[in-house]
Image (cartoon, rainbow, N blue to C red; front, side, top):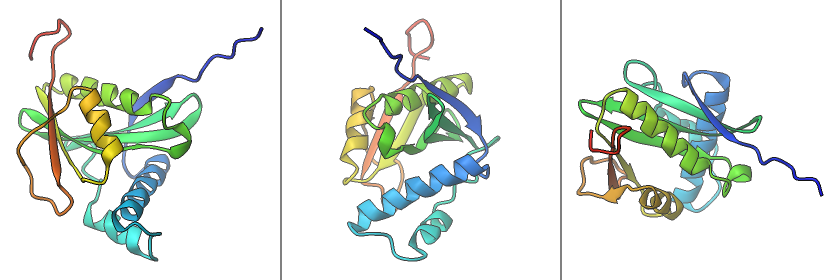
Length: 171
């Protein structure tokens, strides 16, 4: 009997203007537009959404963008924006072909490591009501719903996770 090793997940920081990042951020935004409107994206609609909600601050010193690979495949991304004492999670995306293989968990673990390294003690995020899979992912990984901390046009649920240090205590 031959046992084939399953691909592993790896993440690395990149600039949002790099070709792989541009491609994944476009795929992410396309899915957000399609799901929000419950129809295919119209011509120019994804470009307008990317312009309305740019990701260019997901680089030093404003934040970080992580790309995820599943084995050799470019498979997802997640970003953090730095705020005094906390970080905002954004752009969490796993390509359809890699969903269900642990990519969301791998991305959350990577952004949490990055946040701890940056010295923040919590991660916050907002999300939409229709993104039920994302909300379930966050809840499974210790993010709890909190009162609104932002007022975006698509913010309908707000979450926060208190980070712990390596010894397991609150930071």
